[in-house]
Amino acid sequence: MLALTNLSVNYGAVSALRNVDLHLQAGEVVALLGANGAGKSTVLRTISGLIRPVGGDVVYAGETLHTLSPTAIVARGVAHCPEGRRVFGGMSVLENLRLGASVRSDAAGIRSDMARMLSLFPILDERQHQSAGTLSGGEQQMLALARALMARPKVLLLDEPSLGVAPLIVRSIFATLSELRAEGVTMLLVEQNARAALALADRAYVLRTGSVALSGTAAELRGSPEIEQAYLGAGAA
Ligand code: ATP
View 1 (cartoon, rainbow, N blue to C red):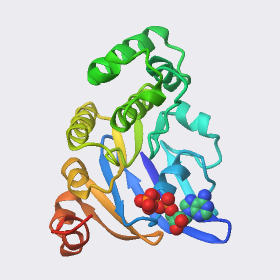
View 2: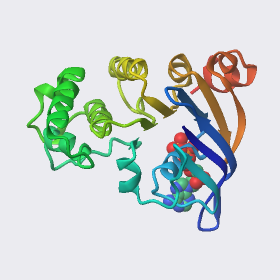
View 3: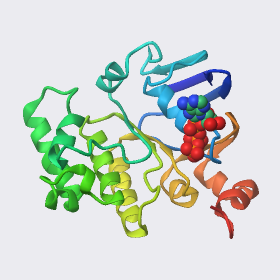
């Protein structure tokens, strides 16, 4: 469904990704793990058209993505939920949700998805008229996810949905991701919380300094001594 082939990305003179091969099949949840600075966010930003690769291809459903604009990419069903709760702080919860649907024109579908988001995330329902900037960090994270879902994506790119969020809210976010998975939404999940990511994912890739160091099924990686030591064992981040 989505394939990155031989992908290389630079920031000026800095090489961030080198010859990355990664693919997602329809309905799969794939985790992308790696240390800080390994290039995980760069993979997501490249897929969503925010950065252009210097080499390689991004192909989605048979179409080259890396020459399209970010808006055109969202319109094709690829939604990006960025790291760091990027909500529009001066706008209300409802206005943020409506913006997520700006690539759609099916008014009835948008209304029913809006109602669905408010029932998936009851706290957003309670605060629907509050400006997003006054929400707590975890609530903003939920709003960022709900906003991405308002695009009714076929592929959801998630950048560290648990970052800086209290454990109870992490559980609620992962429960929602699990429901979406059951509905067949394909997901590429960047996560520091490798245990939670590997519990949800079908497969995973580990990036190290811009290259794929390891890949396999989530079960294989959960059993890998390298993953155990770096991400799952005592003292792991
Ligand atoms: P983290 O988990 O810390 O967010 P990451 O794996 O998502 O890390 P990226 O944000 O993709 O890593 O960064 C990959 C590399 O590219 C890093 O070395 C980073 O310093 C560099 N980089 C990222 N954005 C820029 C930028 N705008 N300009 C220059 N270098 C950048």
